[in-house]
Structure formats: C-alpha cells, structure tokens
Length: 110
Image (cartoon, rainbow, N blue to C red; front, side):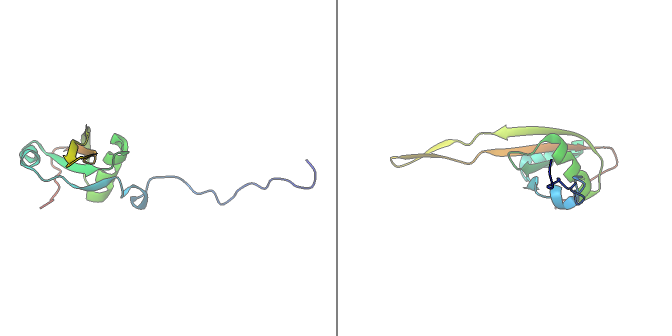
C-alpha cells in the first residue's frame, strides 16, 4: 500500500429520519368537499411531492402532528394537456395522500 493509507471516516453521521429531513414530503393539506367528508372516517388528505413514498409520508405525519397513522393511500394524478392558441402545454402532475389515523387521534387543520 505504501505510505498513503486510507484513514477511516470517523465523522460519519447517523442517517436517521428527523423532522428536519422529513419536513419536505408534505406540501400542504388538501381542502376539498371530498376531503371534508373523509374527516368523518378519521382520514385526512394532503398534497405531497411526486417522489414521496408511503413510509416517508407516514413518518412525517407522525412527527409533525404527533398522531398515530393506521394507513396511507396514495393517488397520483397526471396533468391535463391544455392548448393555449396554437401552443400545446400541460398542467403539472400532482400527488395526494389519504392518511387514516387510529381511533382517538385527530388533526386540527382548520
């Protein structure tokens, strides 16, 4: 090996999920008529990033609101193609998560 030996990296940090790292998966609560009706079933709807997974969403909801999540369902909606005169464009793709909480837990969104 010679005189140049590779030194072990002692400053390796633990890659656990903290509130700083997971606080970017959920963008905002999704407010609609259907989302309001889902509150009776103890389920809440949130707009999320397109690359967010169910486990990241679950961990962020539990960390941010201090509740226990029973399940997460994810809906990915493709943006509609729209015409603007002779130019063709499309709306942005969206992803929303329906989060069902365990009995006794609630989130005060409004």
